[in-house]
Image 1 (cartoon, rainbow, N blue to C red):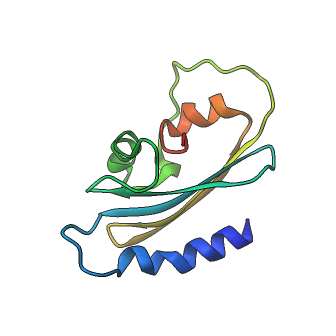
Image 2 (tube, rainbow, N blue to C red):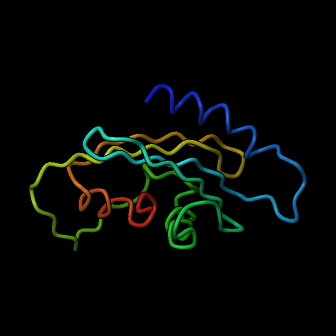
Amino acid sequence: MRAFFAAAVAAVPLFAAGPAVAETPVGALSLSRSVAGGPQTIVTLFCDPDGGTHTTPKQACDLLRPVQGDPGRLAYDPHRICTKEYLPHQVIAVGVWAGKPIRYAKTFGNRCEMIAVTGAVFTF
C-alpha cells in the first residue's frame, strides 16, 4: 500500500499541472481496489469533464460531486442488504479535487458493503 500511495502522490502534480488542454478537470483521482489481499486494480477518474480509465466515470463523478470528491463523505445506502460473508475489499483514492488533496483508504468486509457506501466509485 505504501508503494501505491508513493506512486499516486507522485502522480498528483501530473493531474494538476499537465499541458494545457481544452478543459482541465475539477477532479483527478487515482483509484485502487484489491480483493482479499490480491493484486490491485488501479484506474484514473477525471470529473468535470468526466473521463479517465474508470469504466463508468459519469456515475462515479455524479456521486463524488456533492461531496467535493471525498469518498469518505459518501453516505451509506440504508436500503442495501448485505450478507455477512467476509471477503475484504480494500480501496484507496488519491488525487486532487478543486485544487484540494484527496486521500481515502478503507477496507470493507465484502463487495456489497463497499458498494453500499461508495456506489460506482470503486466498481471498475
